[in-house]
Each structure stands twice: as C-alpha cells, then as structure tokens.
Amino acid sequence: MEPVQTHIDEPEKAVLVGVDLGLYDAEDSLDELEELARTAGAVVSARVIQKRDKPDTATYIGSGRIEEIKEYCENNEIDLLIFDCELTPSQQRNIENETDVRVIDRTMLILDIFASRARSGEGKIQVELAQLKYSLPRLGGKGAELSRLGGGIGTRGPGESKLESDRRHIRRRIQNLEESLADIAKRRVQLRHRREKDGVETIAIIGYTNAGKSTLMNTLTNAGVLAENKLFATLDPTSRALTLPDGREVMLIDTVGLIRRLPHHLVEAFKSTLEEAANATVILNVCDASDPHCGEHLDVTFNLLHALGCENKPIISVMNKCDIADNLFALPNIGKFCMISAKTGEGIAQLLATIQISLPPTRRKAEFLIPYSNGGLAAKIREDGVILQEEYREDGIYIKAVVNVILAEKNKEFII
Image (tube, rainbow, N blue to C red; front, side, top):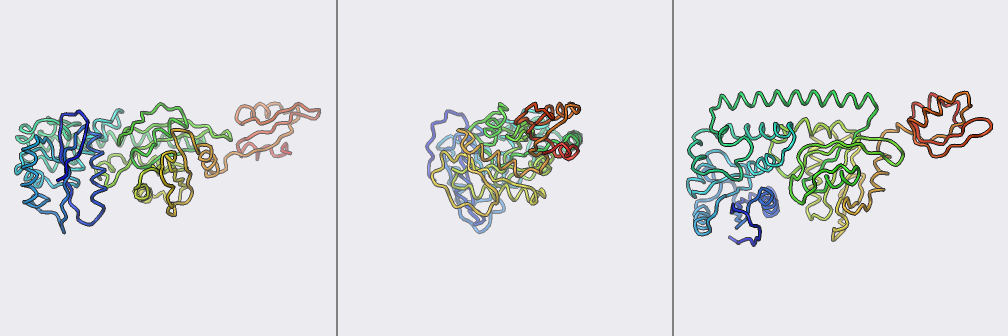
C-alpha cells in the first residue's frame, strides 16, 4: 500500500480501495476517485488496488487485504474507506464491522458532492431524490451504525434523521420529490415551446466534469458562473443569451458535468436537465484537451448523447484548454471540432463561426432598395436585423443587412 503525499489541511483522512476486474483501467479510475475525494474535502492517505476475477460477495475484496487495510487504518487514524465501486448494503456493513472504519462507495461519494454543490431548488430536489433512492435498500439495521459512526463525507443532503426514518416515510418523501420534479419538467417543456414559438435556437453545453464548460459559458456570455478547478464545480443549469457575429441571438444552456460510471440514480434524477441537451438545436461537447484521457471522456459524453437520441443533431466537439495541452493528439472520428482555450479566448472566433454554420438557416444577408413610401419596412429591418450598410439614394433607401429569412422572402421584390 503506497502512501499518498498531501498538504491539504482537512480533518477526514481516507483510504481509497479499488478492485481490478479487467473491465477498465483501475489506476485511472482510482485517480478520478482521488480527485472526487479531494473535491469532497477528504485527505487521501493511501490507495490500494487488488486484482481479482470477481468481487468477494461478503467484503468485495479478499479477507487478507481487509486485514491489511484494518491494520493501516488503526496505525494511521483513518476516518474513512472509499471504495471505487457500488457496494451492496451487506458488503458495506461487513467491511465496517471488520475494520471499524466508516465505509462509503463511489456512488455515495458522488451523491455527497452533488448535495454540497446544489444551490437551486430544483438541484436540491434532484440530489435528495437520488440519495433517498440509493439509501432506501440500505436502511435495514443502520440506525445504530449511523449513530456510532457519526457525520462526515457521505452524510450530507437528506441527513441522518431522514435516513433513520422508516421506509414508509422515505417512500412518501420520494413520491413527493418525484411529483415536484414532474412539475418542474412540465415548466421546462412550456419554456421550451415558448422558445420554439419565438424562434429562439438553443445551444447546449455538455461534457465531462471539469472540462471548462463554466469558463466557456463565462467567456461567451459573461454569465458569471462559478468556475473552479474541482469536479462538479457547477451543478445547477444556467441559461444565457448569446449574440452570434451574424446578429442571430441564441440561448446558451450549461448542463451538469458527466463522469465515468455516473450513478444511475443521478442520471434518472437529472433527466429533465439532460433533456435540455436532447432538445437543443446544436450541442457543444466540451472536452479537456490537456487530459491524457480526453478520448475516453469524449466517449462518455457521446454515449450519453446516443442514449438521449441526439446522434442526428449537430454536435461540435470543443477541445478546450489547448493552451496547456502538451501534445495535440490524433483525434478520433468525432466530426466537427474546434480547438479552443476558454481561458485565453484562443479559437473562440472559429467556434462561433462553426456554431453559425451548424444552425438552420433562419437568417441571411440581403441588400434591399426600399421606396421611401415603404419606410415601415426599413424600420422593421433596423429593429429585427443587423444593419451592415445604409444609404439614402434618389430612388429609395439602400440597406445591406442580416435579416430573418421569412422577412426577406416576404419582401423579395425589394431585394437587389
């Protein structure tokens, strides 16, 4: 077991535990788990990986390794064991009984981070719903254990009082939360229909957590969204207006960050938020180009988009942080892509141009010669279009502008 050097002054000391079943790169996954633990406020004291053909049914890892972990925890005052998997309720209880250390798994850790980051009413409802659904099968006999083990990472959100309540109360609470989310989903649909009626195109920003989505949102719209170098720095969706260089105004929508093996309870709870991406006109798949695993991160987001039925929508892969990328790797077959730095502004002009050509042609450039008797049309073009040139001539008002295609079609007799 190799100690991990850390200088973070936080009270909870944790040991990360992974099992290499050959299904994915266990070291990379544990790296990500360490980042998650850091985001939650833990100090990672050590990491351990055991190779196995299949998990142990009682304790997930072997009895010999459990003894080794127990001894390390006793000698180093470890507060928390974090397993890089989803443990069954019995496995979690057995490990706690063997080691006398509080145990959480990857899912509980992610739920805990979401609970600490949710700010909006909708975000809090979504997180509490996911936590309660996860906790429901784990309620049996946990009252005394929760009291003994106390608070800490993995206990935020609904809190111990809710988790110690009877199943009937939990199920009733879940039903109430689901009804609240259904009402929010209806309002989302109404808002979406209103945008469609008004002809507002939407651009959804999706991507792996910490890929720079919030920084890109701020760069494009001055949205003032929290941007931190932490996983899930922003949780609640943000919408802001963006004016493109050709004068078109679109709605830019930020969505929750993704991660490998995102707990299915969270995916279900955030379904209405993720549907914003499914219903967008264009999707920006933001990826950290400086991350050596960016190809895998792109796969995670593409798989989710496929599950949401977005494969036929225009998707632009936005390779962010190119200013600190050591090597420009050979990109997989990802279609349209742009290399940018949301922090420095590099490549933003190209990104905006790519967004423009990906949108349906709702506006076009046209030259009008409008008789003075049709001054109302000139006023309409000034109001709704982007004026590029205007002159008062003997035979009328000359206007070169970017206008709505419907307006241009209705007044094509004045187009020169």
